[in-house]
Length: 495
Image (tube, rainbow, N blue to C red; front, top):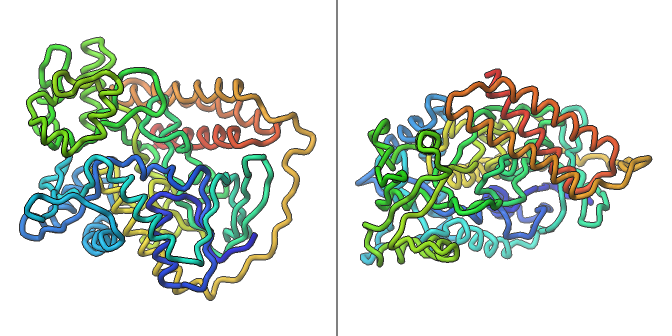
């Protein structure tokens, strides 16, 4: 296949870019590919909302900038932060025009939410299912454009690069058939990598595919030491993914308590439940260790039941399915891997260090988040960079040469059949447990050096399996998870 622009990923980062570019260049051929169905992405699971200064009376850009920089612990790029924050109102108004149903108060004003790290309430949201509402609105908009061609259930295995220029990607379908899509521009919007940890809020598809593909062809990767855990994931049983209890619930007044019913955060955190995610996660890990428990609890019993029902119907329903009545008992919670703050290094237009290769969303490292993402900044980041990339590509696409056709080489010659799911699951489980222990040790300030040797050993076993067995989508995902894990550990140990 040939196309002008190839987009890999169907969350907000990919969909917003496709819509923006199609608006500007209605005659170019845009191909959008996702490895699951068109609804499955990290965007779909975003509960809290999207941050932005929409009320210049109660808030201003400098407040949002300072909150972001403070959360990022000095590792954010100030120019990136300023660009994203100052462009937020225009991008959010576009989302509203596209039909996103953000909640309003009875008097018709925006019902702003408050989350940890924000000095004022500035979160636009749709109840506790903002991501799903966004995804629906963007997919509806996508139908307006006949030059966007959407393909599902195709797995991107490898980027095709010649002389530091990306010319497309190679894909596998569900029948393990391989084919390439040649493109002038390739745009990665492949999401995060939470599945490298045994406990994560990310869907099963979040295996670091885009980052691993880009890394293998030499693209610069940065800030992978900064992986954010969300402090309050539902802790009821071993499951993957775990259900996220949105930070907005703490902003609404819920308290974190220990087994004695104490609000333990105030021992070291003056902001308590409204501190940033990283320090709350560390405090919870410490409390769990000190009290020898496998969770803490989120207490909503003092909050008005009608207000809870109105704002958090999905959380109430999810808890009910686990036989938890949050109106009368606290919710067991524990930290879980949530957001990849680093990724494929890009500039302000989303360009990577490989020519004609762009990245956006969670797979990209824009410089916005630094060491710790401020809550509800990620959806905003994806929108702003989608716009900036679309403006740049619309100007440059005519001058980009069409790549020469690639001849695919047979990948499975003289190899054993693809490994069984049991073999892959065994290595995958070991990797996930290793990475969760690594993060736990990091949070508790315990030695990390042994993990370098452990990941090297696992990495070797996974590469050995890849070289001796025929390729399959689960094997590629495992290889991508290992590649991502090495970046996380190496960046942490040798930063």
